[in-house]
Length: 131
Image (cartoon, rainbow, N blue to C red; front, side, top):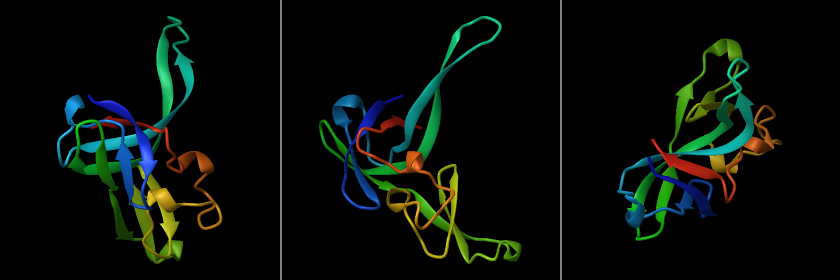
């Protein structure tokens, strides 16, 4: 597993990751972008189970340099059944945001999509790991 961070946001669909060929990154590798929340403790053993992860999106590397990589969002569109009265839904990895047009996880804002909170918007410093 390769772990790093979002080093820069280039556009609504592209990011620079803080890991590159020195870390084992190769073209077409996929990464999940996430943030960490509170740590959870097992109530019986009191063992630290780790931090809760909030998945913000997934990206695919298309250019690898020695210490960084350039990646694009994996955003695609699906048709929503008519009872929802929406034209489409855009999927961001495990996150579904109902919208009228194709959107990227990097450009989501609360004005456009009320259920998506600020904590789901990709930011510089968010953690990434290979999947």
